[in-house]
Amino acid sequence: MLIPVVDFGAYKLGENEVSGEQLEILSWQIKKAFTEVGFVYLQHTGITQLEVDEVLKISKTFFLLPDEMKKPFSRKSFANNPNHGWVSSETERLNPKRPGDLKEVFNISSLHPDMRWPSDMFREIQSSFFLRCKDLCLRVLRVMAHSLGLEPEVFLNAHRLIGSDENGSTLRSLYYPEVRSDRVKEGQLRCGEHSDYGSITLVFQSQEGGLQVRTRSGEFVNAPSIPGTVLVNIADLMQRWTSDVLLSAVHRVLLPPAGDSSTRQSMVFFVQPDDEALITCCDGSNKYPPVKSGAYLMERFSDSYGRE
Ligand SMILES: O=C(O)CCC(=O)C(=O)O
Ligand SMILES: [Fe+2]
Image (tube, rainbow, N blue to C red):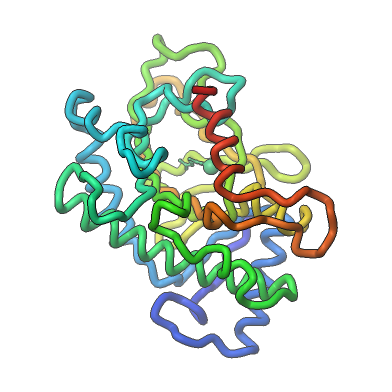
């Protein structure tokens, strides 16, 4: 298979220290994947399939509610956080050249105690999964810094506020409803071609799979769901930060074959540096001008939601 599978067991959640030798092996494998493909499957991260199934299940109960009950939780209706909340189908265009994506999402961008939630159970399960993803991504960022010969804290220092309103990291639940082929617009997909905006992304798919990743040679390959693993990819700010050493690969989700009425689900944890973090090429070059993480993210939202 093209996207490598790497055993993260030596530094999984709950494992407090990783030996120098194990860190070397992990760093080498992760760097190879992120420079050649931009995606890697991590095995034995400490996040179990049971946890993933639980968060997919509670997300689905929300998506299956009538729109009237979801509207009060719409994105842009939370005063403290512009990205938090529900987005209806065909609203976001991850490829702005295509019609709106055939997916619904719920973004959790803030764990502020005053947030409104669809239910206590939803809050509990989603918030704890958010924190598990946060712990894992900090471990991955530490290994990545090591793999590039940088100070171990260099990425971590810019990710201190995940879960607060000064950091755009988001746990996103996605629901892809049944596709009615008689209603599909020309060129419409479940999720248009795009690369992610922030530093790294964690992806969890339901069993059907469906994600495709563009390789360096330009062809799309399937990135199936591998139960028990976490798929991790590099996003655009990280590619910029590393002066194009690490690769932010384009990916998409096609429509199911005609006559296939299945739905699809996924969970994605978008990791974003703190809003005020200034992202400057870490090799000291001027390949990209410094940019503030928060401002960069707002610019990217304008492309995918339209300029408002
Ligand atoms: O649903 C998926 O598998 C991927 C979604 C995705 O790439 C995104 O929301 O950025
Ligand atoms: Fe994506």
